[in-house]
Length: 231
Length: 231
DNA sequence: TAGATTGTTAATCGATTAACAATC
DNA sequence: TAGATTGTTAATCGATTAACAATC
Image 1: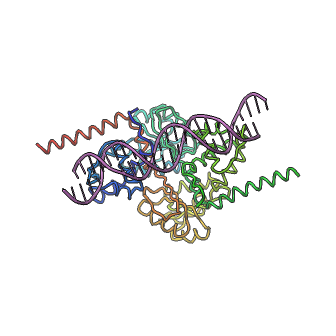
Image 2: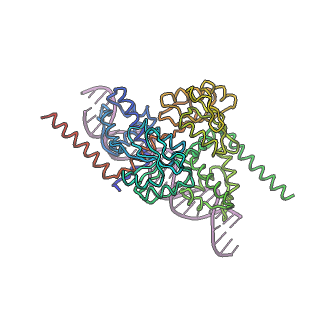
Image 3: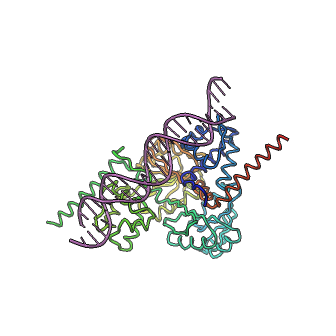
């Protein structure tokens, strides 16, 4: 693709900077230092400066960053300087929630359509966005040159959906199905997996001592089972 | 907390292993090697073996891992060997979708209640789970000794909600609001931020050449603006 | 015993942090 | 000029990968 590949962890921080700048601009703040951005974001000031310099030198030494200027740069870097057309596949509860949220709150994207296979939901409108039969997805993707799809179908049909949308030109997918999906090189799949998030959170809600005693307890049960067998 | 702190990246992989084991067990597979787990998960076999040895030696050299045995160990490690009681704060579309999903599909958690402030939704039931007024959250949290909360309220009330639930004993929060939340040490906040996911995805959907030309173009515009000012 | 695969230590890689010169 | 803050290089830290002895 390009000379240097910028790491995924850097890219994930850019939208955070953008959101902070949006808030600062709303409060008419004109200049912000990396230290202030650090306080707002939780990332270190050094890291923020380093992240930004991957793309250019946007600040003024001794002063800081102009909020409006840096925001515009970030929009261009991320690719938000023109509205991105996206589609949502799966118009169940989650698909509907995501469609509504983006239609109402996200000024950087335009949801062209939602798709489903369920005749019950086909034909409905979500904030003015029509739910179409999934069969029509290829046509819409090609017509609008859509590159980004949100997938909220059940795990067992997710791969099939990926194959179909990729075949028709989609190159970036945000997957909410709890499944490992495969796609040809050059297609980016990001997973937003609620179950994994929730389970790793439960790990942290369990006190360390309790976890250790559970593991140990299990081991003792096995031991006594083995001894029972031997008897 | 404990002797060694196991990194967050390791913990996030454990639920993936668990899911694969669930699928293997459903297909009556009794033994799995780290290589096979690697193919299913996308993580390297070395990494999988290393992750597991943080908690113990669960495999058999020359053979592999017993699926049922490893699954039971993972359940205990993550803390899923008994149902975790959770609450959902915010019963809008996203909160409803998450409540439904977990009630129907997630056998490891029990949603005790959902909460909202909107009189329109209070009193409704989501898959048998009642939506209660947020004022009652402290009482329910204490009564059921709830440690885990999912927060799907708007960004501007999220911090207030965090303060209230933490005050009453919650130690782990999965936050869906697009906001940086603060909590005392020992309280874990995981963020599931759709906007950040979607924006970083849009970055990857934009071709590298296009991004560079946009940035460059911006720079030229500025230059010509400066020149206009000088004229 | 031979073949296979784990568990573990050492080597490598990448990301974060520290330090500081450049410069407003 | 003095004070401040960026941009960038070097040092550190942590995570991944490679290698291999242990052992089924």
